[in-house]
Image (cartoon, rainbow, N blue to C red; front, side):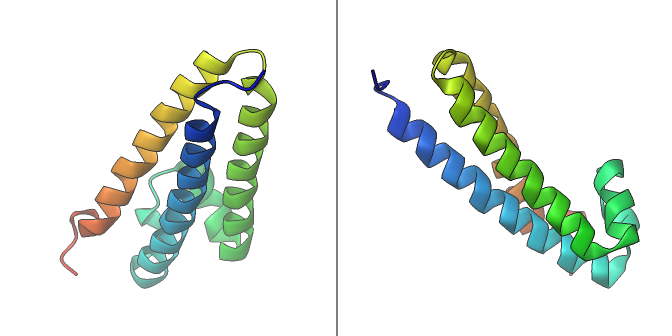
Length: 107
């Protein structure tokens, strides 16, 4: 049986992928201009300082794993998966807003 909110979940997953890509592009732009210490996530900062391409690949692999995990778990735990995806989407939306504001820097 397909859950009645399955389409909304798929839309949120698409939005998460899109916002993750925008976050990656903004991070690469800011950090290549002003230094990798601007990356607030210490794990991603480590990978970006080794090689920006490595950081980008790991970031995109993480969002891909998130999408696969959500789709796998949605069958048995739809309401929990849906709520978790709402939270992740809101976090990435707030992060996108932070990037739009220029991370508090004068651009």
